[in-house]
Image 1 (cartoon, rainbow, N blue to C red):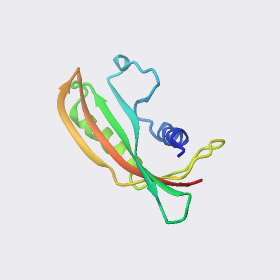
Image 2: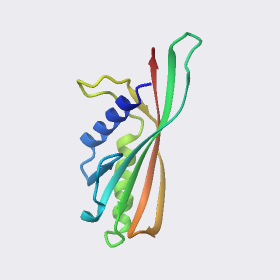
Image 3: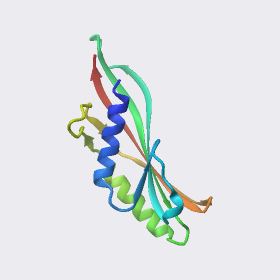
Image 4: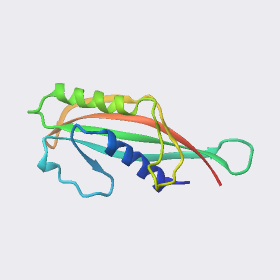
Amino acid sequence: MKFAQVQQSIEEYIKAQWTETQVSYDNVQFNSDLYDQYLRCNILFGEGRKRTITVGCYRQIGMLMLTVFVKPAVGRARLLDLANIAATLVTDVRVGATLPLVAPVVNLKVPDLILDNTERSGWVQANVSSPFYYDWST
């Protein structure tokens, strides 16, 4: 199913491409109090299914969630700028594994953007969600 390898592959892609702010990843300690803006990267896996009638060919779907956080004092214009950069980064992209990692190619689709101007715990946020899929075989 390659969950760990695919997650690592996507995270390495984000790490290499995102230069605007610090990035928070799943299961990695991060202190948001040190920053006035940052990006959170979450990878969610969905339902897998057979791809063909041939035994051993499967397709796994998922969702890459990139959430931009900024302090209200930074401004909502910066929030929208960062969300736009995040959306551009994942629009219609094929992510391959970085050697020595062996993982299937991940196909990112066109993302959705949800701008949330409500202040929560001292932050405003924008959510960029990009569906993805990859094929694998046994």
